[in-house]
Image 1 (tube, one colour):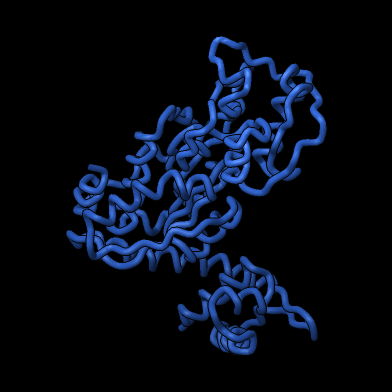
Image 2 (cartoon, helix red, strand yellow):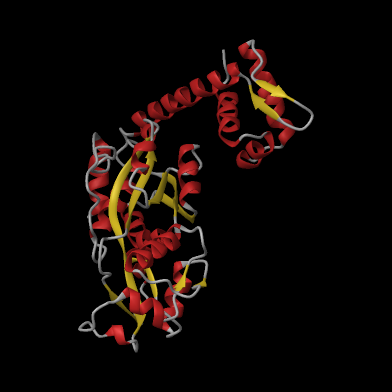
Length: 333
């Protein structure tokens, strides 16, 4: 019989590509991982890894077994979730990964959910979008908050991940209080602004920077090279001190920087979609349902919140079936 623990190692290796990366992710030594995968080969009766002196890669048989392993482990997790769904009180630790502005915006809602369920604990850590998706897919966290600038991310779950839409997050202009555009009667002219103001933006290649570049290109303005800063919180702080202007996603305002003036941008909306993502096999677990419902409720109370148009590729609402539904509804209140 194939060992579940070794199947999990094989699945991790398939996702991470090297024995060293697999070992680092799971807290093992590379030699221990290699030994366990060799034991799995003996159990399966086929060669799963093509090894050289410096690397290893899956054989065709290894790739097929890794695909089976992902489905088998998802079914095991689903069975565990089904059994725990009969519990009235969620308990244990839930790990959530979030990109930085979402972590700041949704932390209060998550904290409120913990007050209602003293047996539940939370770990909220900040990641980039791709890291959040991989973390939830490979079981490192239960829920991830991710952003999508393309409009197609929710269709990539392939049945393994469930995407729950939280909000559409448009770009807005932020200026210092003493700036001429702090006057709401003054029209926003991005072309003129690009020529007369010091712009600050994320480094080249960052999604929010690409959005800024699209905005200014559409307006016909080509600003001087913006000052580049990692982190929207840093940019907001500099704007508040009168150092320059910036276009940022509205969610960046949730951190509470009150010394800036926010203006809507003219022209076609440039926005990202924000989702909560969980593994399909885990969504009925009461602890996960509480977190998903808390995020859904928190999104409804964010200022200026806009909904994501339905595409049919994402779930409209968090799970609420069985006894865990009552638990999740309680957390939302």
